[in-house]
Image (cartoon, rainbow, N blue to C red; front, side, top):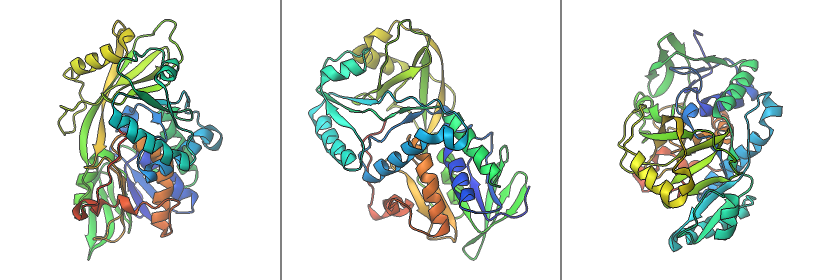
Length: 380
């Protein structure tokens, strides 16, 4: 255990290792990252792997666009294949209100260089041949969206950060943060004490407790989300990453079968990682309505992971005003993995005291006390 670090990152998922790489590449020496388990074993390894730029919040779009650029060149830059597929993201819309909102969102996305567009129901059926179009009014589609393998992204960033001198310590849980006169002076871990004047919280669903160690409220709630993978489907057609926006039912190709999921409005907060059948009847109803061809498909397996949900489903990014040198990047409400490359750059710039490429001041954790919530519409 190193006795001293210029900064300690708590959290070894995609957000943490991306930040570690960006800081090490900027010349930040004796940087340490710790995680209570193996790198990427928290929410990152449970993610569906989607990468997209179709958001409603302008800052989210900018973060996503920057991240997509990194995913495009990831294998060449980091020597790690991430199995990137770009069938596009397809949002199916069945209400006039959703159509109107997505029309506005697409206009903002186009203004920021995203090639998204509103399409007809007929074109949606061509892009996603398994769907039933009953009740649909329109759809939104972007051909540059897709999915990749989250664990591979973690491996790529972790290897690059280590080559640049960062110390990454998995299976070493943080147990506290020492402060003196409002300044961070050390991080306590299961392996010992690390003197440092900077802590970066990238602990996802576990972030609220870490903020509490220094008196900072990070309003992050852990919420279970479940994913299933089907058995191989003979003659499976090419399909876009499809989201039935009204129900949140989604699917994309995963090897010879499909990966599918759906949010559960009855899910209660908590660190629940066991699988439950309670959501399956609602999932079955959505499948029967929107993709009835899948009803006879067998399920090969599945898993449960945690969303890190904030009150407005937008991230918490910033530097805490009440304690010297406590930074945070958390609360992404299901889109942290896909934004991790860009957010790593933002964390680097916040650490170095320079302006990031995008203004993230609106994501300050204190916004809720000031009635500054900025809801993100395009969530699942």
